[in-house]
Length: 187
Image 1: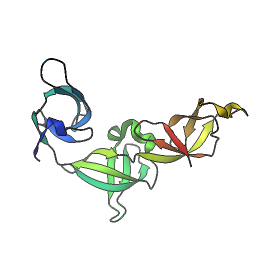
Image 2: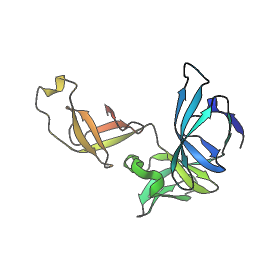
Image 3: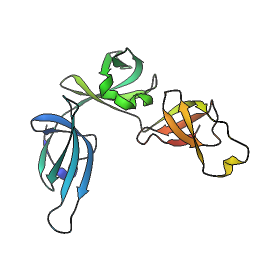
Image 4: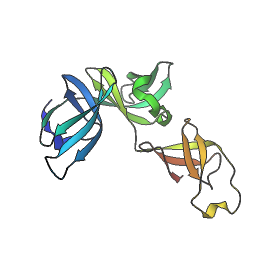
């Protein structure tokens, strides 16, 4: 654990805030015409899950928290926890459903994810930038509709709902962004 400047703050790092570990969820740099610049930061508590907003002055120091990372593949959901297995040691990690939250639609069996641990407790999961899914439900397109940039709704094999171009059909494999939840390309 070391001290870092507010200029080094970025989304996804862990810091001590009010003597508790928090994850930086969002950060905005504000440089008003008058006065000094500051950072508006949204922090999520690792112990309670509560999100708070705080303003740091530019150049202020904060304490960074060491978070251990293990790479593991998603295996299954047991009703309360998502279970991941480390491919080399076959060690199992149970991550509570509330930590995964709405990102559950980006979990695919045997894909590798980075699981973050603080004091041997799981505190977060880093998703790959994109995943490949199969379209299981979408409307049929009408011939001649494919020339425009029009989009239609689709449901994927993970349960995710995305907007896709009109030429996408049921059974197509598509790549989607896990950051924005949007369609990237057809495979």
